[in-house]
Length: 317
Image 1 (spheres, rainbow, N blue to C red):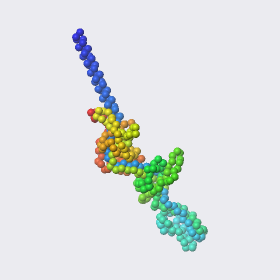
Image 2: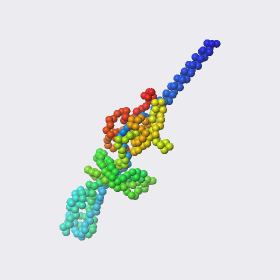
Image 3: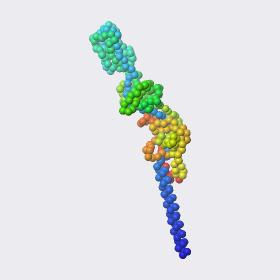
Image 4: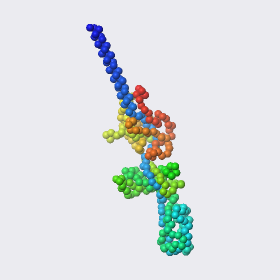
Protein backbone atom coordinates (compact mmCIF):
# COMPACT_ATOMS: atom_id res chain seq x y z
CA UNK A 1 0.00 0.00 0.00
CA UNK A 2 2.84 2.34 0.86
CA UNK A 3 4.51 1.66 -2.49
CA UNK A 4 1.31 2.48 -4.32
CA UNK A 5 1.07 5.86 -2.56
CA UNK A 6 4.67 6.71 -3.41
CA UNK A 7 4.05 5.75 -7.03
CA UNK A 8 1.03 7.98 -7.18
CA UNK A 9 2.98 10.90 -5.78
CA UNK A 10 5.75 10.43 -8.34
CA UNK A 11 3.23 10.22 -11.17
CA UNK A 12 1.47 13.42 -10.09
CA UNK A 13 4.80 15.20 -9.74
CA UNK A 14 5.84 14.20 -13.24
CA UNK A 15 2.51 15.30 -14.70
CA UNK A 16 2.70 18.63 -12.86
CA UNK A 17 6.22 19.15 -14.13
CA UNK A 18 5.00 18.50 -17.65
CA UNK A 19 2.25 21.08 -17.26
CA UNK A 20 4.71 23.68 -15.96
CA UNK A 21 7.10 22.98 -18.81
CA UNK A 22 4.31 23.14 -21.37
CA UNK A 23 3.04 26.45 -19.99
CA UNK A 24 6.57 27.90 -20.06
CA UNK A 25 7.04 26.94 -23.70
CA UNK A 26 3.61 28.30 -24.68
CA UNK A 27 4.22 31.59 -22.89
CA UNK A 28 7.56 32.01 -24.61
CA UNK A 29 5.96 31.34 -27.97
CA UNK A 30 3.29 33.94 -27.26
CA UNK A 31 5.93 36.52 -26.35
CA UNK A 32 7.98 35.74 -29.46
CA UNK A 33 4.91 35.90 -31.66
CA UNK A 34 3.90 39.21 -30.08
CA UNK A 35 7.33 40.77 -30.64
CA UNK A 36 7.55 39.56 -34.22
CA UNK A 37 4.41 41.55 -35.01
CA UNK A 38 6.50 44.70 -34.66
CA UNK A 39 9.58 46.33 -36.14
CA UNK A 40 12.01 48.19 -33.91
CA UNK A 41 13.04 51.69 -35.02
CA UNK A 42 15.33 54.28 -33.45
CA UNK A 43 14.51 57.97 -33.31
CA UNK A 44 17.16 60.21 -34.85
CA UNK A 45 18.02 63.86 -35.38
CA UNK A 46 17.51 65.21 -38.91
CA UNK A 47 15.85 67.77 -41.18
CA UNK A 48 12.24 67.59 -42.28
CA UNK A 49 10.18 69.47 -44.83
CA UNK A 50 6.45 69.69 -45.29
CA UNK A 51 5.61 70.47 -48.89
CA UNK A 52 2.74 70.71 -51.36
CA UNK A 53 3.32 69.25 -54.80
CA UNK A 54 1.82 70.10 -58.15
CA UNK A 55 2.48 69.87 -61.87
CA UNK A 56 2.06 72.39 -64.65
CA UNK A 57 3.67 73.92 -67.70
CA UNK A 58 6.02 76.83 -68.31
CA UNK A 59 4.17 80.00 -69.30
CA UNK A 60 5.16 83.53 -70.15
CA UNK A 61 4.69 86.15 -67.47
CA UNK A 62 3.78 88.76 -70.07
CA UNK A 63 2.24 88.95 -73.53
CA UNK A 64 1.64 92.23 -75.35
CA UNK A 65 -0.23 93.24 -78.46
CA UNK A 66 1.79 95.84 -80.39
CA UNK A 67 -0.28 98.52 -82.12
CA UNK A 68 0.72 101.19 -84.63
CA UNK A 69 -0.43 104.73 -83.92
CA UNK A 70 -0.68 106.07 -87.47
CA UNK A 71 -2.30 105.42 -90.79
CA UNK A 72 0.53 104.11 -92.95
CA UNK A 73 1.81 101.39 -95.29
CA UNK A 74 4.12 98.57 -94.18
CA UNK A 75 7.49 98.73 -95.91
CA UNK A 76 9.13 95.61 -94.45
CA UNK A 77 8.37 92.94 -91.85
CA UNK A 78 11.65 91.73 -90.35
CA UNK A 79 10.25 88.96 -88.12
CA UNK A 80 7.89 86.02 -88.32
CA UNK A 81 5.98 83.89 -85.81
CA UNK A 82 8.30 82.25 -83.22
CA UNK A 83 11.17 84.65 -83.99
CA UNK A 84 13.34 85.27 -80.93
CA UNK A 85 14.11 88.95 -80.49
CA UNK A 86 16.08 91.19 -78.19
CA UNK A 87 14.87 94.43 -76.65
CA UNK A 88 15.28 97.22 -79.21
CA UNK A 89 15.37 94.99 -82.31
CA UNK A 90 13.52 96.52 -85.28
CA UNK A 91 10.45 94.42 -86.07
CA UNK A 92 8.53 96.39 -88.74
CA UNK A 93 9.35 99.44 -90.89
CA UNK A 94 6.85 101.79 -92.53
CA UNK A 95 6.82 103.97 -95.63
CA UNK A 96 6.65 107.14 -93.54
CA UNK A 97 9.96 106.21 -91.90
CA UNK A 98 8.55 104.97 -88.58
CA UNK A 99 9.62 101.66 -87.06
CA UNK A 100 8.33 99.28 -84.41
CA UNK A 101 10.92 97.81 -82.06
CA UNK A 102 10.82 95.02 -79.49
CA UNK A 103 9.86 96.37 -76.04
CA UNK A 104 11.75 93.53 -74.30
CA UNK A 105 13.48 90.21 -74.96
CA UNK A 106 10.91 87.76 -76.18
CA UNK A 107 9.29 85.63 -78.86
CA UNK A 108 7.06 86.92 -81.63
CA UNK A 109 3.74 85.15 -81.14
CA UNK A 110 1.73 86.44 -84.13
CA UNK A 111 2.34 88.72 -87.08
CA UNK A 112 -0.78 90.36 -88.52
CA UNK A 113 0.65 92.37 -91.41
CA UNK A 114 2.98 91.92 -94.39
CA UNK A 115 4.93 94.17 -96.72
CA UNK A 116 2.77 96.72 -98.58
CA UNK A 117 -0.13 96.21 -96.14
CA UNK A 118 -2.09 99.34 -95.33
CA UNK A 119 -2.60 99.89 -91.61
CA UNK A 120 -4.91 102.18 -89.70
CA UNK A 121 -4.18 104.10 -86.55
CA UNK A 122 -4.43 101.86 -83.50
CA UNK A 123 -4.28 98.64 -85.54
CA UNK A 124 -2.67 95.59 -83.90
CA UNK A 125 0.29 94.53 -86.05
CA UNK A 126 1.89 91.76 -83.93
CA UNK A 127 2.09 90.17 -80.46
CA UNK A 128 5.17 89.39 -78.40
CA UNK A 129 5.75 87.11 -75.39
CA UNK A 130 8.39 87.57 -72.69
CA UNK A 131 10.64 84.48 -72.71
CA UNK A 132 13.00 85.55 -69.92
CA UNK A 133 10.57 86.04 -67.05
CA UNK A 134 8.71 82.74 -66.99
CA UNK A 135 6.13 81.39 -64.57
CA UNK A 136 4.40 78.13 -63.71
CA UNK A 137 0.72 77.97 -62.82
CA UNK A 138 -0.52 75.02 -60.76
CA UNK A 139 -3.84 74.11 -59.17
CA UNK A 140 -3.85 73.62 -55.39
CA UNK A 141 -6.60 71.94 -53.38
CA UNK A 142 -8.52 74.31 -51.13
CA UNK A 143 -7.53 72.33 -48.01
CA UNK A 144 -3.87 73.18 -48.67
CA UNK A 145 -4.40 76.83 -49.56
CA UNK A 146 -3.97 78.18 -46.02
CA UNK A 147 -0.42 76.78 -45.92
CA UNK A 148 0.72 78.65 -49.04
CA UNK A 149 2.16 82.16 -48.84
CA UNK A 150 3.77 84.51 -51.34
CA UNK A 151 7.56 84.23 -51.27
CA UNK A 152 7.71 80.55 -50.29
CA UNK A 153 10.55 78.62 -51.91
CA UNK A 154 9.64 76.20 -54.69
CA UNK A 155 11.69 73.29 -56.06
CA UNK A 156 11.10 72.67 -59.77
CA UNK A 157 11.96 69.60 -61.83
CA UNK A 158 12.00 69.70 -65.63
CA UNK A 159 10.77 66.63 -67.47
CA UNK A 160 12.41 67.80 -70.71
CA UNK A 161 15.98 67.98 -69.39
CA UNK A 162 16.47 64.66 -67.54
CA UNK A 163 14.73 66.01 -64.44
CA UNK A 164 17.09 68.95 -64.10
CA UNK A 165 16.33 71.04 -61.02
CA UNK A 166 15.37 74.71 -60.92
CA UNK A 167 14.16 77.02 -58.17
CA UNK A 168 11.42 79.57 -57.85
CA UNK A 169 9.08 81.37 -55.48
CA UNK A 170 5.34 81.66 -55.02
CA UNK A 171 4.39 85.01 -56.58
CA UNK A 172 0.59 84.98 -56.72
CA UNK A 173 -2.35 83.11 -55.17
CA UNK A 174 -5.72 83.35 -56.87
CA UNK A 175 -8.56 84.93 -54.89
CA UNK A 176 -11.12 82.81 -56.74
CA UNK A 177 -11.37 79.04 -56.79
CA UNK A 178 -12.59 76.69 -59.49
CA UNK A 179 -15.08 73.96 -58.59
CA UNK A 180 -15.03 70.71 -60.58
CA UNK A 181 -16.11 67.14 -59.78
CA UNK A 182 -16.69 67.94 -56.13
CA UNK A 183 -13.27 69.55 -55.59
CA UNK A 184 -12.34 73.23 -55.38
CA UNK A 185 -8.86 74.28 -56.44
CA UNK A 186 -7.04 77.61 -56.54
CA UNK A 187 -4.44 78.70 -59.06
CA UNK A 188 -0.98 79.39 -57.63
CA UNK A 189 1.63 81.20 -59.74
CA UNK A 190 5.32 80.40 -59.32
CA UNK A 191 8.03 82.70 -60.71
CA UNK A 192 11.18 80.89 -61.86
CA UNK A 193 14.44 82.34 -60.49
CA UNK A 194 16.72 81.46 -63.42
CA UNK A 195 15.03 80.05 -66.53
CA UNK A 196 18.32 78.87 -68.12
CA UNK A 197 17.20 76.70 -71.05
CA UNK A 198 13.55 76.34 -70.06
CA UNK A 199 11.05 77.10 -72.81
CA UNK A 200 7.40 78.13 -72.84
CA UNK A 201 5.14 75.08 -72.89
CA UNK A 202 7.51 72.62 -71.18
CA UNK A 203 6.02 70.42 -68.43
CA UNK A 204 7.42 70.59 -64.90
CA UNK A 205 6.81 69.24 -61.41
CA UNK A 206 6.86 71.58 -58.43
CA UNK A 207 7.21 71.27 -54.68
CA UNK A 208 6.31 74.24 -52.48
CA UNK A 209 8.06 74.12 -49.11
CA UNK A 210 5.45 75.34 -46.61
CA UNK A 211 7.30 74.43 -43.40
CA UNK A 212 10.69 73.02 -42.45
CA UNK A 213 12.80 72.16 -39.39
CA UNK A 214 16.49 71.36 -39.11
CA UNK A 215 18.27 69.04 -36.68
CA UNK A 216 15.08 67.97 -34.95
CA UNK A 217 13.98 64.61 -33.50
CA UNK A 218 12.23 62.40 -36.07
CA UNK A 219 10.43 59.07 -36.24
CA UNK A 220 8.31 57.40 -38.96
CA UNK A 221 4.85 58.95 -38.97
CA UNK A 222 3.10 55.57 -38.79
CA UNK A 223 4.70 54.99 -35.39
CA UNK A 224 2.45 57.63 -33.80
CA UNK A 225 -1.10 56.68 -32.81
CA UNK A 226 -3.86 58.92 -31.47
CA UNK A 227 -6.20 57.87 -28.68
CA UNK A 228 -8.59 59.99 -26.60
CA UNK A 229 -7.06 63.16 -27.97
CA UNK A 230 -3.46 62.30 -27.07
CA UNK A 231 -0.64 60.88 -29.18
CA UNK A 232 1.51 57.94 -28.18
CA UNK A 233 4.08 55.44 -29.44
CA UNK A 234 4.75 51.81 -28.52
CA UNK A 235 7.83 50.95 -26.49
CA UNK A 236 9.10 47.37 -26.13
CA UNK A 237 9.90 46.35 -22.57
CA UNK A 238 12.30 43.72 -21.27
CA UNK A 239 9.31 41.76 -19.96
CA UNK A 240 8.33 41.00 -23.53
CA UNK A 241 5.36 43.33 -23.80
CA UNK A 242 4.77 46.64 -25.53
CA UNK A 243 3.93 49.74 -23.54
CA UNK A 244 2.50 53.04 -24.73
CA UNK A 245 4.35 56.29 -24.17
CA UNK A 246 2.79 59.70 -24.62
CA UNK A 247 4.49 62.06 -27.06
CA UNK A 248 3.95 65.51 -28.51
CA UNK A 249 4.51 66.16 -32.20
CA UNK A 250 5.41 69.08 -34.44
CA UNK A 251 5.85 69.33 -38.20
CA UNK A 252 5.08 66.23 -40.25
CA UNK A 253 4.92 65.08 -43.86
CA UNK A 254 3.76 61.89 -45.54
CA UNK A 255 6.69 59.89 -44.14
CA UNK A 256 8.08 61.37 -40.92
CA UNK A 257 6.98 63.37 -37.92
CA UNK A 258 8.85 65.62 -35.52
CA UNK A 259 8.76 64.64 -31.84
CA UNK A 260 8.85 67.69 -29.57
CA UNK A 261 8.34 65.87 -26.27
CA UNK A 262 8.33 62.32 -24.89
CA UNK A 263 11.33 60.76 -26.67
CA UNK A 264 15.08 61.26 -26.90
CA UNK A 265 17.53 60.57 -29.69
CA UNK A 266 18.16 56.82 -30.24
CA UNK A 267 15.10 55.78 -28.22
CA UNK A 268 13.66 52.54 -29.62
CA UNK A 269 10.02 52.41 -30.62
CA UNK A 270 7.87 49.66 -32.13
CA UNK A 271 5.90 49.80 -35.38
CA UNK A 272 3.33 47.15 -36.25
CA UNK A 273 4.43 45.19 -39.30
CA UNK A 274 1.03 45.25 -40.97
CA UNK A 275 1.44 49.00 -41.55
CA UNK A 276 3.64 48.13 -44.54
CA UNK A 277 6.35 50.37 -43.20
CA UNK A 278 9.33 50.91 -45.45
CA UNK A 279 10.79 54.03 -43.86
CA UNK A 280 14.48 54.75 -43.99
CA UNK A 281 16.31 57.93 -43.16
CA UNK A 282 17.98 59.39 -46.22
CA UNK A 283 21.21 61.36 -46.32
CA UNK A 284 21.11 64.83 -47.81
CA UNK A 285 20.07 64.70 -51.43
CA UNK A 286 17.58 65.76 -54.05
CA UNK A 287 13.86 65.40 -54.42
CA UNK A 288 12.23 62.11 -53.68
CA UNK A 289 8.95 60.67 -54.87
CA UNK A 290 6.09 62.58 -53.29
CA UNK A 291 8.69 65.28 -52.51
CA UNK A 292 8.96 64.18 -48.67
CA UNK A 293 12.60 64.83 -47.72
CA UNK A 294 14.47 63.77 -44.60
CA UNK A 295 18.11 64.71 -44.16
CA UNK A 296 20.42 63.48 -41.41
CA UNK A 297 22.66 66.57 -41.34
CA UNK A 298 25.60 64.66 -42.74
CA UNK A 299 25.67 62.20 -39.82
CA UNK A 300 27.52 58.99 -40.53
CA UNK A 301 25.06 56.28 -41.51
CA UNK A 302 24.97 53.36 -39.12
CA UNK A 303 22.86 50.26 -39.64
CA UNK A 304 21.65 50.28 -36.05
CA UNK A 305 20.53 53.92 -36.33
CA UNK A 306 19.39 54.23 -39.92
CA UNK A 307 17.65 50.95 -40.66
CA UNK A 308 14.73 49.18 -39.09
CA UNK A 309 15.64 46.19 -36.97
CA UNK A 310 13.65 43.04 -36.44
CA UNK A 311 13.07 42.27 -32.75
CA UNK A 312 13.03 38.74 -31.39
CA UNK A 313 12.85 37.11 -27.96
CA UNK A 314 16.28 35.62 -28.37
CA UNK A 315 17.75 39.07 -29.02
CA UNK A 316 16.17 40.60 -25.92
CA UNK A 317 16.41 37.75 -23.44
